[in-house]
Amino acid sequence: MKIIFLTGGVYSSLGKGVALSSIGKVLQFEGFKCSVLKFDPYLNYNSKFLSPNQHGEVFVTKDGEETDLDLGHYERFLGIELSAASCCTAGKIFYNVLKKEMNGEYNGETVQIVPHVIQEIVSKFKYFENTDTEILLVELGGTVSDLEQKPFLLAAEYLKNQIKNDMIFVHLAPVLSLNYNGDKKTKPIQHSLAILKEVGITPDILILKGNTNLSEIEISKISFNFPQIPRENIFSSSYELDIFEIPLHLYEKEKLFSKLSFLLNLKTNHSLKEGALSNWKKFNDSIKANKKHKLKIAIVGKYSSCPESYYSIIQSLKFAGYELSAELDISVLKSENLKTEDQLKRFNLICIPPGFGEKSLKGIFLAIKYAREKNVPFLGICFGMQLAIIEFFKNALKIEDANSVEINPNTSYPIIIPWSDSKEMRLGEIKVTFSENTLLHKIYGASKKDARHRSRYIFNKKLAEENQEFKNSDLVLSAWKDDILEGIELKNHPFFVGVQYHPEFNSRPLAAEPIFLRAISAAIIK
Image 1: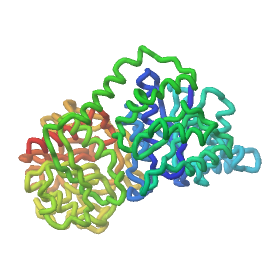
Image 2: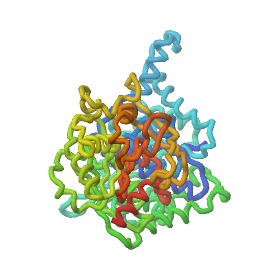
Image 3: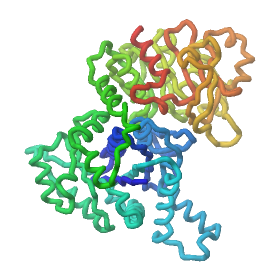
Image 4: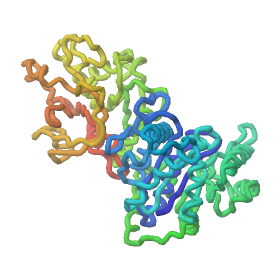
């Protein structure tokens, strides 16, 4: 197994996940099987309690791990399913070390960063040695100047000394330009490379990120300042490129695979190569093609401070738009700022995304009621489905106190309740069954589907069954997992669907999740 270890310099949110995903895609073009390991240096055990407003969405893997959104990049770019083994925080590393110490596994040794924490970090690579992974893509979150990164850099340097030529380092750094004259400054890059050198790491490849593609003269000038990295090992990428163009740019223009092949002594697997490159080009063509339709879509949610709070949903909508030749203008509306229906009249589709808690719900209920009554296509996901049910009971069935115990623990009509007595969540992939002759059954063309979950509350089936008016209403309970409701739809409406699961985590380029395809189709027709 070969290892590509990527670090970032100068500032965070540079696009390391996209860069490493693109490197992985370049390798897939040549037939290699890749997997991913993401290290996050923060002390949280996982991403479970991280605020979407600060950190972006929480991505859930097939086996139920709550992770950084970069794992979504890797799954979408590489078309693979990752697991808990692919994500590790500093919090988890220190927890494991302390747990071993308390269990006496260190036999009375004084537990220290070196060697115990370093050994724990290195142990995370071992899992992939027993898989069919040919190349492991490793990302270290944050920047090399972060104090928290030091143990991970030491572990990487230790591993490099063990496996020698089977591991290379890639460093991603921004080229900063002065606004008044466009002069490009490389001093910040020099500082980040100096930090790596302190722990014995010299990058084999340097990828420079700029506002525009760098010219040969500019790259040569930068190369002169970094003699430890050969000119032919320096590559550039631009913020002007769509993220899905980057693999093609690195493969065709920058000839990155040639350098990776030389450094890691790779032999192309021609039997697996067919189709990967042509399919990716086809996908990029669908992005650039002139679109037949133009749609405005509203995502009405609680988290709008961070543009990546609903990243997977936005990508899923775009994938469906590409397949259906629809240009999408997607607006994320902060629910607390939504006061009137007039603010919604320009939209062809309304989506209510996942969320938690009782705050900022009036605007969401307004959007749901508007979509239901005005026949505007509607998609509610997880919390969005639950709020759609509550809105229906409140306004269509006139049960004013209908609510979720998450929102009002003292409600007299708890139509949404905890799924268990514990505080544990329903996480990961669960098989969902679609009722016959329903829209959801038609959308998926099957009676069952494996779908990812992240929820703590469920529909109160027992209470609903006692309400005859509800049983005779247009709200159809169309998907189940045993006695747990997984999907709803509204009769006599162009498209009003809610699902308890998270379809956005399964959407891929050229394979948009079917519910998003149907939602966009309904918006086009409407």
